[in-house]
Image (cartoon, rainbow, N blue to C red; front, side, top):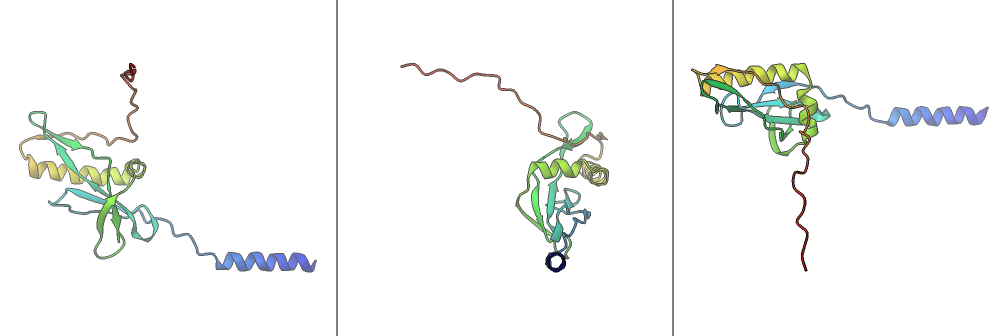
Length: 148
């Protein structure tokens, strides 16, 4: 019985000392890169870390402006602070996880529509869903054998 009490006491002490895991805030906001509406910040990790998704437009089809997806976002720092900034690269998996959320896609859609209106005001806006995974690519050519 005294051992059981001791074990419970140690377990309670260890549980009390462990830091609580802070969930990500999933805070979303426009974060300009060079021009208005050309970036979106997604705070997907604790302590304000996240993604800075760069937004680009595709006007290669006459009269149509649509998103051009760049699945290599920058790493967001200080996303819950007063001056967020980005540096380096975040993972593509984080990008795919973020764009799977409806609230993220909603902000991306509104910012990309505004970016298209600024860059190509006479073109028709066309929404294209962001990619949710890497395309599966098959190897189309085999290696050339070495000759001696």
